[in-house]
Image (cartoon, helix red, strand yellow):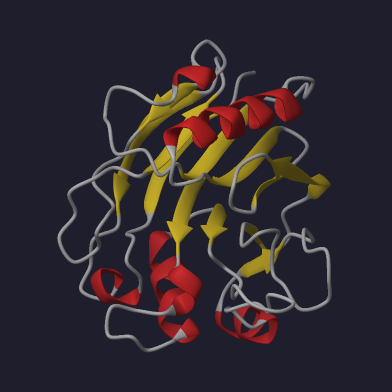
Length: 225
């Protein structure tokens, strides 16, 4: 199974144009089965989606997981999950996260075998520690193997994710920020023990380098059993 994570910056590219079609073209290029998105919804008011549902239906092979708390958002606090059409999803959840700025996380069980969670953590490390504890607690009782993907906002390659130690093996597929000149691996993927890791990478194309300020990251995995 191929999983991907992409902070789309509300579909506003480095040329300051909001272009959801461009974002969907990047997503289609990844070839993933499940794509976790951050900043999928606009920030103000009722937080309408930056990726119109009809555009997703018409121009991709993906279906959004039902995670929104209203009729206009695609996700929860900007976190959304797309799955290939026809894939079975169950038990969608919204996870409240602590911190000075409003944050949330989302999760869903895919094909009855894997729980996929999407996160976008805060800018301050002390807040991220509390958010990681909240995510870990929310996922603790899940009987399925679990993958946590997202923008962890952690610049250090060695520190900052200690709250996940023992529960997840963390992977940084490559430098994903800033898209024009990547210098940091802010976008990462945590896999619970037993999930086979078969490599990963960063999608660095001419289009992805202008579509958002982050580049997408991906991993290929095998599930236990």
